[in-house]
Amino acid sequence: MSKEVLVTGGAGFIGSHTVIQLTQAGYTPIIVDNFSNSSPVCLTRLEEITGQKIKYYEADILDTPALSEIFKKHDFQFVIHFAALKAVGESVSVPLKYYKVNVGGTVNLVEVMSQYGCKNLIFSSSATVYGAPQYLPLDEVHPTGVGITNPYGQTKHVNECVLRDLAKSDSEWNIVLLRYFNPVGAHKSGMIGEDPKDIPNNLMPYVSQTAIGRRECLSVFGSDYDTPDGTGVRDYIHVVDLAEGHVKALNKLEESCGLKVYNLGTGNGYSVLDIVNAFSKASGKEVPYKLVGRRAGDVASCYSDPALAKTELNWVAERGLDEMCEDAWHWQSKNPNGFETPPPGKL
Ligand code: UD1
Image 1 (tube, rainbow, N blue to C red):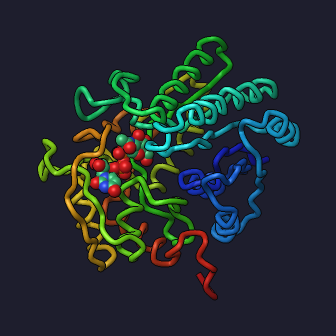
Image 2: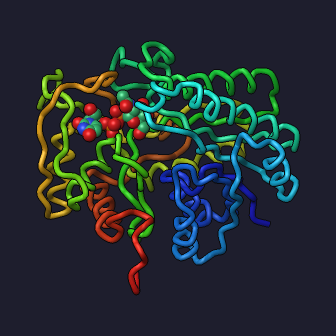
């Protein structure tokens, strides 16, 4: 029988792409989402893409009785925990909300998992745990928890600590912490993609909304960094590559791996202006931009050493920057208003 995988936040950007890869690998994903920053329309799209019924529950990870009920109904072998809040600026103004949902939600989830004897977890962590890089590229032994500039980043770090302690306390737990670099792009179908509810905080959705005419002009935050063109350099990774990394991590859990940590990145750094140029090429649209001051908390450069995931997970990112931009544009141009776009006759 196909193994059931609970996917918290499975209607979100990374979660939804992972659900597709899970079905393709023969797993049965079961989604739990409260739709606080996602749309139920995504679920319909997932069914169209996979040709399968996708089971989901509208529930909050802070709602212990609801989670228990879901665990009672299923035989989860694994949990992939994406559900979290992720707006960096908001986390500075309302930190308690972030600690409650991101840290409280994780503690809640692993308690329920424990009660039901499911002790295999993949956790969505972030390169943000490395703080300001002490050296580049960032490998997994780079110090973490030092110089993190916002509560959102702290919650990722604290969750890593919680899960590390949990794994130490009970050898039955198998936990993979995946540290994502900058996920972008979209599924080839153009039916699902990133759909920020508000003004985008992140670069790629802002660029694509500018190209489609929803935003007037991109502000490039800082042009005096110590980088080739003065703008910030990041490791952008195609979300489908990232999703595939989760399936590889499940294989690792199957080996009873204990606690493991992997970067998921490409190892390549691109500047803000590289992204603007690549996106213009992919979309055939101009992306108007202006150079403005630095954004508080940003670092000049951040990119991964992805070697460990290659050796231990047999995973490498395969899709390049042009494909990331083409797929992001395909999604954006088919769905100018994200999941709120009324479906055209044929997608
Ligand atoms: C940000 C978060 C990081 C989080 C990640 C989640 C900060 C400081 N970091 O990463 O903690 O894990 O999102 O996706 O917020 N840029 C512009 N104009 C824009 C937006 C961004 O020039 O309108 C620049 C930034 O200065 C940066 C690059 O684009 O150099 C990437 O920014 P972004 O997409 O926000 O990602 P990170 O800052 O790397």
